[in-house]
Length: 95
Image (cartoon, rainbow, N blue to C red; front, side, top):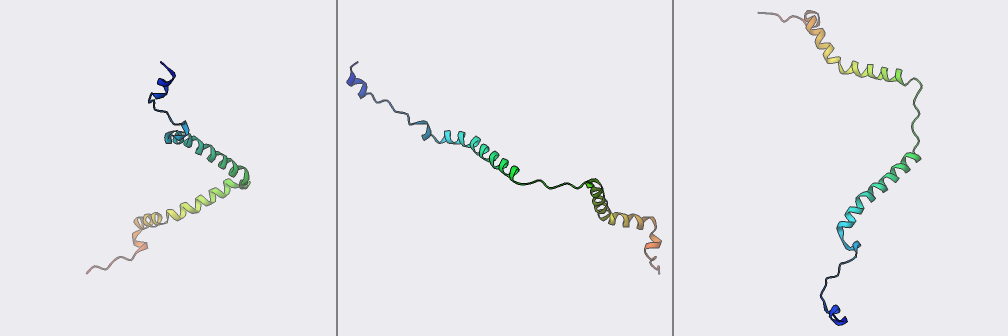
């Protein structure tokens, strides 16, 4: 083979790796995760945590009691009416 015959061969040249979109999709996924982790770190370090009260347990129990009382009010009224219907409602008159 001579030098001229090698230059005349029609071999397709491959483009560089950064010209392929699939490479950027593969690199982009982990790249977005790394950027998001740094944003999360920045937010965690820059935002102070709220202070918890010393009697947080007692306050939580009080909140739960008020929520349970409000949630069960119709059930308690229905149970009381079923147990003592004569006291709650007047007996309808029969003809």
